[in-house]
Length: 295
Length: 164
Image 1: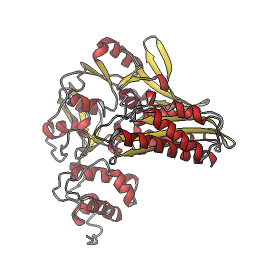
Image 2: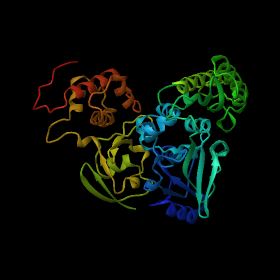
Image 3: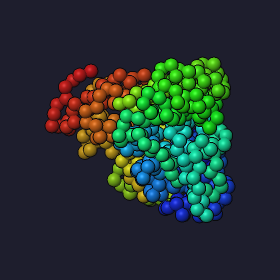
């Protein structure tokens, strides 16, 4: 039987209380949301926090809504809720694509968006999706809150800018003119290859594209599981801006993305295969995102 | 830590360690051994129960997280000696071999049919995709769930077709 080692358990009713508890217990405390990454790590003794601050009752962090020109996603939103959200689907179909291939329905019922991003697993799907759409993360502490672009959120494998005594509360995704609603100019998509249903990505790519006529006005490309810095294929994005939104450009962007990532060989596959996938999946995600932008 | 959990409509008060997992709480503290405990790593899904109406893997939920909440286990499917249609479906269509994954499969299937009374085979497969059957019996499990969808009423009211 695998059970976690001893810890103190506290349940927070709201954000203020969660922050107070985090301050009281110090750096050896961990936030417990869905627990689907943290609890397995604790069973395996990869993590042994002194205290868990349970935020499952902090319902003020469970929302998906549009405010002004941003899609706001609370950190405690469960994967299943993001998957089923008509609002998220309307503006950013990339989230539905990604959620459909994250773990399985039972895990998605518990696991949270904020928990996944804070876990910062190098093979995590939503990091690439949120990076592609240029989201920001809102982080609260006792003094107030700060907003960090997702592309600056990760500082290494399993490490984020969320500091001791801080709580990730929200993601903000800018809805730029042409995105969603009116259709016709913005599209996004996510493509993943895994070994079996619900597994971590062998490689995956997310793309968000904004069209101006037949050209790429702007683009975001996220990559996961292939050692891309900040989960982003920045060189491929730079290449695409201003170019024709066609198969040739997308194929070249895929080649550039493949060239600039640094996959490592592991039990999921050799590095050259992952590099090949990074390129191919980038191209496919761009193609599908552009198709959606045109319809 | 003192917790109060409502399981299958009955309220239980217990004093538990925070590190106790919900699956062990159900099996060891409440003696509800219908919920099985398998891989320990959130993969196999034999420990699936409903937590506040939603299927979860109870090996990855702390018992203290269920404090004040409602849990439904496989023991709650049968009513007054009457099996739930999903249970009948599994017997009718040979949906179980060794039976180890069956309680979890039943709980997920019941939830699926409550929300989607006429699921496609693909929807059934997605619904049980977080659960492993080591006897490789998925075909019959899908058939069993479909049988239950086609026979939503009780055994008394409608004689089942014998389709295997």
